[in-house]
Image 1 (cartoon, helix red, strand yellow):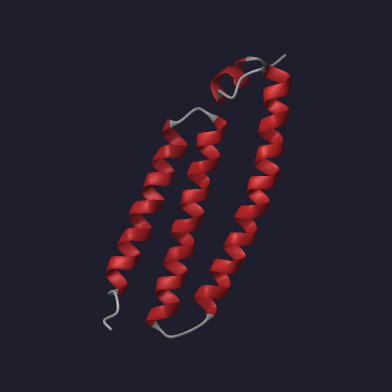
Image 2 (spheres, rainbow, N blue to C red):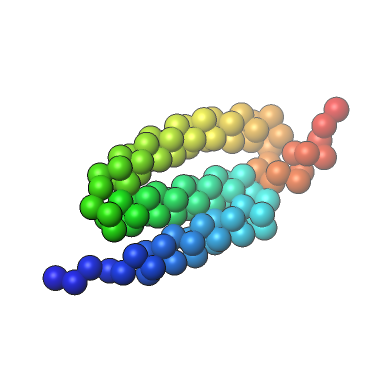
Length: 102
């Protein structure tokens, strides 16, 4: 069985991270912004797993488990804030919410 080269895995992680960053900067909907952050976290986790597999160390998988736990906490807090924002402002558009200060 042949292994996937490290460069391919890191390139995939970089592409996923850039897609998440572009989604975070371009989208104004809070739900899509949270999804973009999730994509970025998974890209970082993929980079850790690829690097750990390259050097035959378990630290990459351990870091990925930490990233998964952090992503789960981010989703819980983020969705609670989204629900609170929607109840208060009746919109999920971050530009509209920033204009409604006062």
